[in-house]
Structure formats: structure tokens, C-alpha cells
Image 1 (cartoon, rainbow, N blue to C red):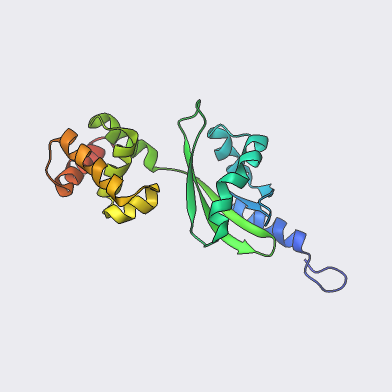
Image 2 (image 1 turned 135 degrees about the vertical axis):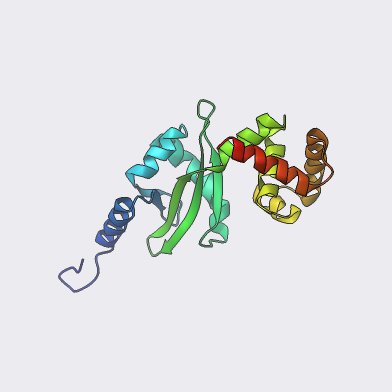
Length: 187
């Protein structure tokens, strides 16, 4: 990795990083500071393809998706992306590392999608209501859910009222208990 002048060759370091991430099964990609994709691991490309994105489509959308996150880049910040109209997949992209070359993002399949879908169908909820019920089951407060779902706490409260009515319960503890029992019986 040292060149003839004893300096570290950044391109070789980045290739080593990509190889290390890929060999450990970490689906990831690197974008430079201009939000241009520099590389993908094969697993990351595979997950993106399952969501209905090819390299060109994803590359064209990457700036609008990641720019808000990179305005205040913090390790662990993430976004969730729904697949296109043909795909039911959903992926989460998390800021994994910041280095001189840019930003490395980890890509993973969103495991919560099936749980949300189960809750949606079992209790005849809307997509958003099912998402909120899922987060209630995870012990999240209205304020936490508002941040996660990018809505106001008042909107969360209105959705909870609708959920309680549809489930014929009076509080979040009973709703969470019913939802968790439903999820356990479907696993």
C-alpha cells in the first residue's frame, strides 16, 4: 500500500476497504463528497437490484436521497427506501464510516417490513398505522416515532387513536400486547 515515496496509496486502501467489507458480508457502497458513487460491494448491488434499482437508476437518485443526511453527517444516521412499484422490498441505508475519500454506507434489507405487513393485515390498519403499531411494540414514545417516521407527534397521536379504535382497545399497552401476540403466532 506504500508507493515508491513511502506514501499510502489511497486507491489501494479504498480497494482494501471494499474487499474487507465484501468478504465479511457487509453490503456497502462509497459516495464521494459530491454524492457520486465510487464503488459498491456485490451484495449491496444485489440488494439494490432486489428493490428494483439498477446502477443507473440508483446513481441518479442517490443525491436527492443522501444529501439531506450528509448535511449533518453522523455515523449511524439512516434512511429507509421502498422498492419500486414491482418490488415489495425495502432497504435501510446507514452511514457507516466517514473518511478522506467520502462516505461509506451500509445497505441491509429492512427486516421490519414483514412485521408491519402482518400487523396491517391482521388488524385492518393503514400502512402508517401499522408502522406506528410496530414502533409501539418496540417501546417507542410518540416523540421517538415522530422522529423515526418524519411526522409530528400530534400526527402519531391521531394514528394511535385510529389504531385503538380499530383494535377495540383503550391504551398502547393492550395494543402492543395484542400486536406482539399476533407477530409471535406468525413467526
